[in-house]
Length: 364
Image 1 (cartoon, rainbow, N blue to C red):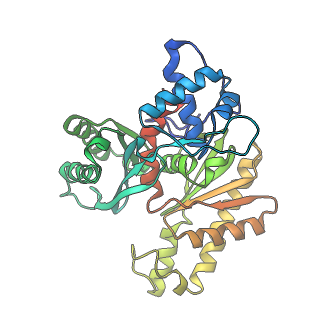
Image 2: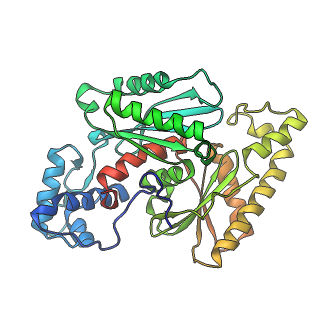
């Protein structure tokens, strides 16, 4: 079953031809169809919207005009030089909506503010409650306020909500779960902002599919390389998880343990600036990581067909690209793509949850 315990987990798309409804009473559904298509493609046209949704040309024009007036859609310059009237490309207005994403980790929590096309407008890091028991809700509330203060007053009214990405380990403990439920309630009461909660790996997959390299993909295996290696299967844009959370100890923690032994990098040190100095530790770690990815892909491919892997991580993009290159070499016919969402894929993924819930078809 899709991993939908808390909030819509995926960047929800429309199919190649999702049938729209022309009745006035379901206009909101049709608006979601249009926005879903624009979240899937950077630009489109009225004609393409009609072809992809089955809506009449008149209905599409009314919907687009309404979304433009609401500031959600922007018109590009007319494309001339073709037969017939000029074509006007449509795209999402980056200023049309904003969302805050909170990714709770160990030992830190990342907070971001993104616009409607996924650009990060604000980013900061806070101590996680588990790492710093003295931390309290006021830090999170003040951080959200500080992020919103960066926006013009009129833009603050366009906040779609706050997304929270929580690791499974946090959700399994009663104290942690109670803490985050209280934080969620306090944000909603004191700030008047809706909060959407999801598992952090599923949230990262959602962000990569809505804003990242997986935006144009339909079926693929998603891996997240964090402290451990995690996987999600994505079929027809739906994110699936197994019956129990599975992670593999071939992630960044295993690399750090090896480096600690050689005293090359302090634990929880800078993971972005010293990768070129890791010497023989890096190839041996990459080999173990790629072997585990191969095993996972072989197991899943016994049941479903796919030929693409997306690797998202807090590690540098160039490191992920090298891992993807080596994975492709070891598995001919498999295409591996490194995600490029920065600085925090999980936090950006968390921020995508309010957009999925408010602006896409299945978010209703």
